[in-house]
Image (cartoon, rainbow, N blue to C red; front, side, top):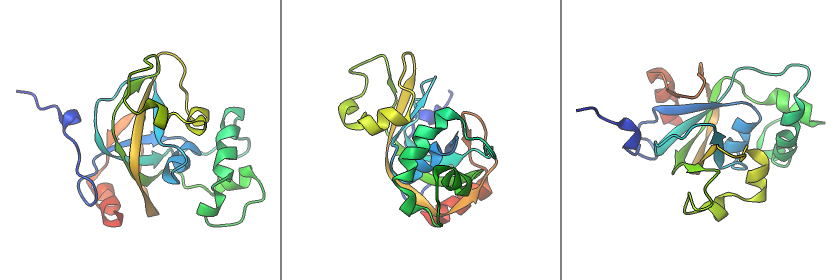
Length: 178
């Protein structure tokens, strides 16, 4: 009989944190500072439990794409949570951690953007800020989260596209900070 690990909740706190997902910056840091609580994707993911939020390694060195500017402007509002001095959003972006686990969140569900009643807490989790920070267009899914635990020191990781399991040494380093 096949065992479906996606349906087993992961323990909170100092438990196992195997599942992870990579997000581009600045969206990964927006989750880590609590400004963004939902992640939007083109496919559903039934897993519920702890998920490590990883920042992608790729950094736009010279020109931040236009589509990232609104997210950076939201992050600017939380700049006091990031050490250093920044004279503009580009400086703030360049100071963000890339290729690292930034936080662990508890993924509580999955809902379709097509279904007005698809998630029991839809109105509470789809604020104007949340709508501005995600892609809620038709035929997509969003994963509500809660209980964000930001790591004091980001843990380097080689990420993957989509969902992936953390290597044991990375998972151990993350667990030490929870």
